[in-house]
Image (tube, rainbow, N blue to C red; front, side, top):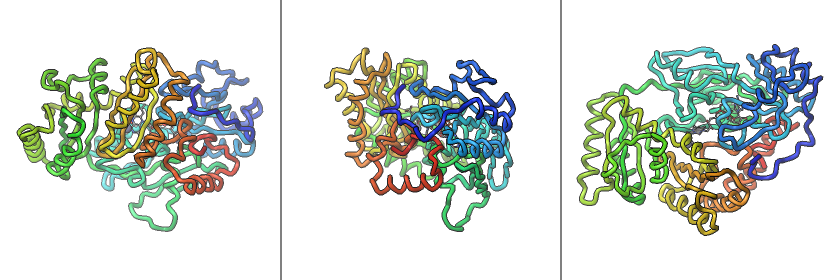
Length: 494
Ligand code: FAD
Ligand code: 2HG
Ligand code: ZN
């Protein structure tokens, strides 16, 4: 069990009993209740997928999982849990990377997966209203025939739910173009920790009627309530999309490259993603790519994926070709080589290399993941500093940390630092990494969580990126919404 710090004890909370289960069966049909307690007596293996996170890093304790189908059922469950002081962990697709969706003690898991209906879609405004448990990819498929896309996209799209995306304020691959969910979410329906239904499922673009409460649940990580419904603005699908993949001799070329690409591509640039050499080689070893000729890549230190989305293929191709020409023909070229995708298949393989890295990391061993914001110029320094630290501690190698790598969303200043323990997590590895990495990030005035959230992993590290005053006011907000501290206890706040 790896919580990054000691597991808090929840003396204020009660464990689910057979009497509680009897009450839940008045709210939900038997098929929506999984519990090791009688009369359900679900085999423990059937609960296992709800008690372990995507990385296999966080192992939970829940003896009961509830899978409601309606907002009214969620409300009745939460109201009862409040009356009995039973802790609740809201769970979406369980793809989170900070242990937020796993029960720390014996809180119940409230899984939203059965709330998966699209409530409405307006093809004129592009406003989609859906249950929180809808899988991101199925929402994309739902609106594709109307030529709309979701404003958010990420590697976990086939499993993560829109309610989970909103609760983590997930960033992903389209943030550069469409901005954060704080802008695209128009309204939410939320079951508050006393069971009250807060209906703010607005479909208005503009609504300045006082405090914008929904913003608190975007990135709230299930600590302030259960998101049950979502209203979100979806943009029209671009008429044409292209991507290029570039190999850079040195990391130091990234900043001038970013400036040139932004200047030359202007409004059509929709993503600018980063992969360092270690991550690229790992991707290749796991069957992704190759995208570029191995000889031309040479000793390239890092790679960049640039995507464009526009309205006219000839116009966009002209811009991309002249960008590549400019980059290659300079006296001191910023790149060794680059390629422009020539087909939908090649476009997809270039993206697959970037999106597939998280799964490759998983196959390499057990990852310590640090999702940080630091100045772009320091991406490589941060990765190198961590590798050097592990070497100096004698912990670098196949029996300790086998790889340290960086990839991420350069356009957003977000580095994914992945530190792989080939043969599994060990306390001395973690002790060498933390608080070293958090202090390093703080020294760059960065953020210890750019987009994955705080969850259980980083609650004790929140202070590296938030002032005492901020944390105090976060606590006050938590106290107002959840005075009994039943909603995802032990997460986010230290
Ligand atoms: P879960 O993992 O189930 O839950 C995450 C948190 O939200 C928990 O604290 C949980 O309690 C809470 N929660 C979930 N649903 C609700 C709800 N309905 N109401 C209240 N609280 C709720 N993240 C990024 O930001 N960008 C990426 O590019 C990205 N790529 C990823 C790629 C892969 C392969 C994987 C495995 C993960 C990736 N993630 C990324 C991390 C993850 O945050 C997202 O996958 C996603 O937003 C989590 O959604 P989920 O439905 O799985 O939520
Ligand atoms: C991504 O951008 C995700 O691919 C996952 O946020 C990052 O694997 C990671 O560390
Ligand atoms: Zn990411």
